[in-house]
Length: 125
Image 1 (cartoon, one colour):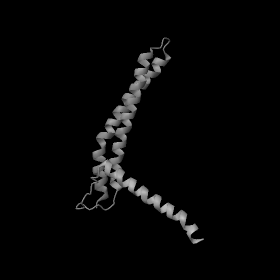
Image 2: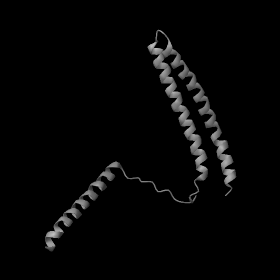
Image 3: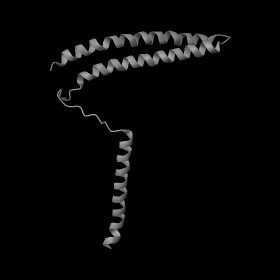
Image 4: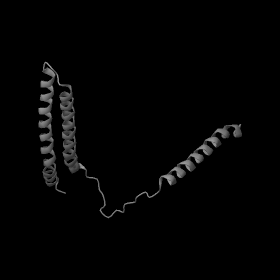
């Protein structure tokens, strides 16, 4: 396994997300500057200020998501666990009702076991 090649490929795949994050961060900064200017104005425009704050927050959140995607791609390089490509995937096909029935049955088993444990000291004494 060539780790340098994996890192190069991950960097290449993550670059578009980093670029998008940077663009969003720059746009968010412009909106933050607008917020600051609106706050300094003698007559504050409440709706415009609220819109600018909302937009700046949205852009910061979007930038964070793009950065997170880029990091996930780059961090995957170091995930070296062995995974068989031929392993069968087993999906749980039980319905919610079946799961509730199973949970209820297991709950009864636990209650019976607890009752038996509570009786045990009296039976031995």
